[in-house]
Length: 286
Ligand SMILES: Nc1nc(=O)c2c([nH]1)NC[C@@H]1CN(c3ccc(C(=O)N[C@@H](CCC(=O)O)C(=O)O)cc3)CN21
Ligand SMILES: CC(C)C(=O)C(=O)O
Ligand SMILES: [Mg+2]
Image (cartoon, rainbow, N blue to C red; front, side, top):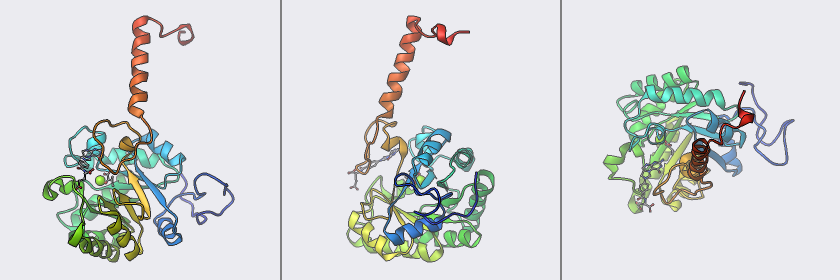
């Protein structure tokens, strides 16, 4: 895995007319530069080797090992139960597998809210034990001391405001945040997090117009999930976007594939072959 310094986006010997920008490793400054140029960037979740490799090959700029692994890997109903010890091996798998993408580790519920010191020590575990390139936490003004402590300690921090799933029970369920009078608060939070040193901010389920205002009022890139087209980047949970998860999807999900259908048919075909005695064939036999 290369840690060399890179040419800026869009230049360099490997520049090609199509495909991902020829940067060796996406770094936080590249995202800021893309915002300044008005160039959109992409983030997807990833929790293991093959998704990470595939999305990295596809030129996805940022891979987030989300605490949504709680739902999408560990089978929990919410993101709340997942632990640092459960997430670290997943982050390690993704950092081993991604050659180009910036890998961000999501700090799970309860691992950073208590104090800046707790946040710093948790983030250090992700950086040392899993080679994360950055960490992400949820929250607005209350998390400013945490963001400052971590960035001063050398750890790039991505913030996350609007709907914050770890506070689902406080927010009264999956609801749009920042409507009406609450819009000013979202802008204030984004500005405070930028001042504290955050390198980017995720906005989840915020009205498109408000997210556009926030994007214009900060220098750091904004990343939307249910926050409209005016954010600097977009993020989706891959099992939602590519149809591995079934059932009711949030309004902000666009489904690009039906992986559940593909996988289910493959498993049914395999089972049918075994039961019929048509697998293994002579070509699979020594
Ligand atoms: N992998 C994964 N992705 C998810 O998005 C997800 C999970 N797991 N697990 C459960 C929760 C529940 N989710 C929800 C639940 C309800 C709305 C919802 O009611 N959305 C309304 C907007 C509500 C409002 O206007 O305030 C909508 O119109 O979509 C959205 C997401 C998304 N969730
Ligand atoms: C969807 C994103 C922003 C997230 O926090 C997660 O997947 O955990
Ligand atoms: Mg998360």
